[in-house]
Amino acid sequence: MTGRRLIGYAWTVLAFTVVVIVGGALVRATGSGAGCGASWPTCQGTVFPAMEGATAIEFSHRLISGVALLAVFGLIWGVFRAKAKGHPARRAVVWSGIAIVGEALIGAVIVLAEWVADDSSVARSVSVPLHLVNTFLLLAALTLVIFHLGRDVRTRTIDRQTLWLIRGAGLVFILIAATGAITALADTLFPKGGAGGAMAETAEHFLTDLRIVHPILAVGAAVVALSLWSRSGAEASRRTATVIVALVGGQIALGFLNVALDVPLVLQLAHLLVADIMWIALIWLAAEMRTERVESDRTLGHHVGA
Image 1 (cartoon, rainbow, N blue to C red):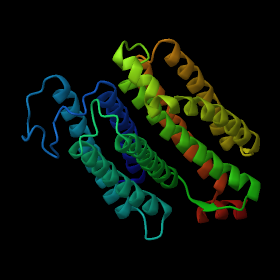
Image 2: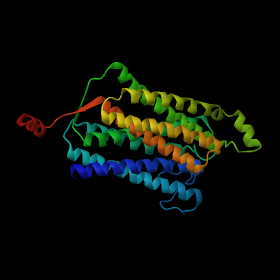
Image 3: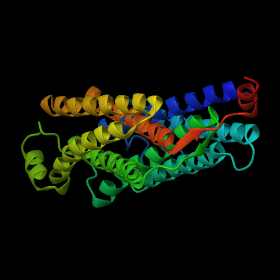
Image 4: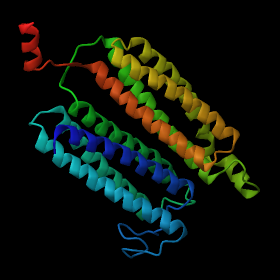
């Protein structure tokens, strides 16, 4: 696979992975996680179950997740053939393999333990954000594969304050993802439009008390995004930082709209989609700010000849 085709394939794998992640949110939001029963990797104990209702949604998600797993393994094979030992794209693609396997294992545990559908246990409340954080690791690794496949760079020295700002931004965005997953789970299990006993349970369950954490962190993300923008010196980095600021603003607007409209399914999926894109942009910006291009021998020869 040539360099350009490999980069194109890597972008395809990244985009398909985002689709799989959004598909997982669809499974959760529709309560379809129990569609295959406590059965994994089979569904309802069979390889090809009847494609109806929750079973169709859950089994379809499993199928595309399997395709994503094979696609990542294909990317690992391609990168290891194209790049020499020690190349940063190799390290990143190994992490993508670890993360995609982690995705499968976490999903299997959730299904086999029956932390699905209407389950509101502490175990599920921990496994859901853990699952999403692992997907962020996967997206980060795939993003870095693409970044390093497309350019020859080396690590550059940056001031300590900027370095800690980048690290802090990563931590804040991961916390936002985790608390967002908890909020989405609370919205699914205890919808604000519920009635009777559901509303009484809503008032008592700890998940509903955690809803407030996510919007508070979202405000923190806006501050971090603006700080990154102010410190992104190079033109390319400034463009990426501007995109992140715009995405954070869009996310806050989507969050308010979600609450105002009682979290409709379409907006839930859109909110997650933008969060994924925002995280990819943050990883790209961090890579831009931490590296500088290495001029090839051909380029250096051209400058000398000039």
